[in-house]
Length: 199
Image (cartoon, rainbow, N blue to C red; front, top):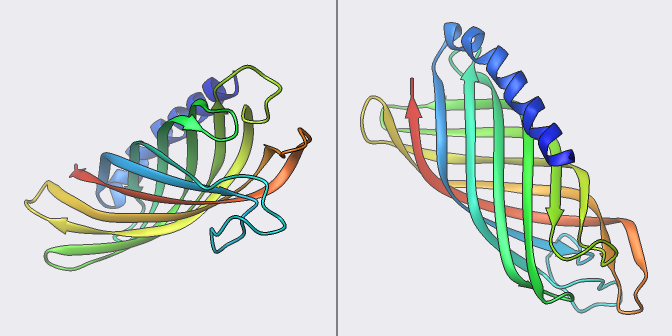
């Protein structure tokens, strides 16, 4: 239910804003591969095993799609949807999927054949897997800060060589004793790469 709500809001807001945004500059669609690295309770250095270790750093492979419409030449609004998956997540040793739905401002600097951008996104994350009660199923608020590099290959197409986002959320994490802390701070890093289409 939460996943459908976030998807509806993202599509609604982006759909109403893109025609207006496109009048002041270009709009672009990105799609590609996404690697998300989640470190529950392991701190900003992503090193687990300390006294505060409540989970194992986990990699999720998947996809990312975003639409950006620019108010002016450099300032725009981005809506992003991602899906990431892992088939053997500790401590439940089963498949887990994660979907995020985010919206926020983007600032881009462009040169002849390259462009770089920075952005801040707010939204929701929905994670699911085994039955409820194991501490890995939740829908929570998530924010991210990041940026990337695009390399132009033609007037309409670019290759996004790198897009890196730092993510922060508070999630339910199950400890070895079985207790679930519903607001444990969790760090994430997301790397994405793919193709950008401008229109």
